[in-house]
Image 1 (cartoon, rainbow, N blue to C red):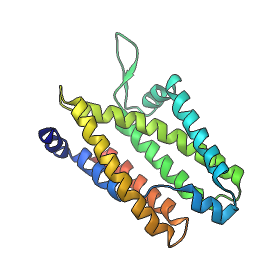
Image 2 (cartoon, rainbow, N blue to C red):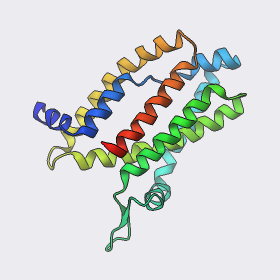
Image 3 (spheres, rainbow, N blue to C red):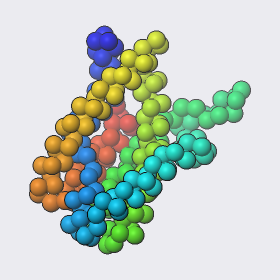
Length: 196
């Protein structure tokens, strides 16, 4: 296991993603929704439900392969006709979309606009996560994919601990601060997918 982790960290892309995951704030809607709109847990739950619906339904559509083809990174497999490759440009574009939408969250004038922005952000996140999984699996050496993803989940767990601490620190300065910091991190992710 340790050997797999060391080999992962030799990949510049993986190292950069792991480092950024640890400092990227989590996005807790409750403080923002409560302080700005006076809404509570029911509204936050509705946003989470919409995001989960996108997460469930989007992979059943041709949206992700169409994006790969549209961004010019993918090529058609002559035997199957499926679009393959081109994951980094799609991930970068979705990170930019998430950054822009994330920066809009605290600027939303009402709950309806916030719901639409969060739904669009969830859509971009689902597409990004699918392509990032493809990128990561292509970086794993043959026979070590399971261990590679195990370490990736370990790092996500570690990031879950640190990101909530960073969020708490930022929320104490204002409920909108985590969104602007996350937008900056998402722009850094986009640069990482393009240049690392």
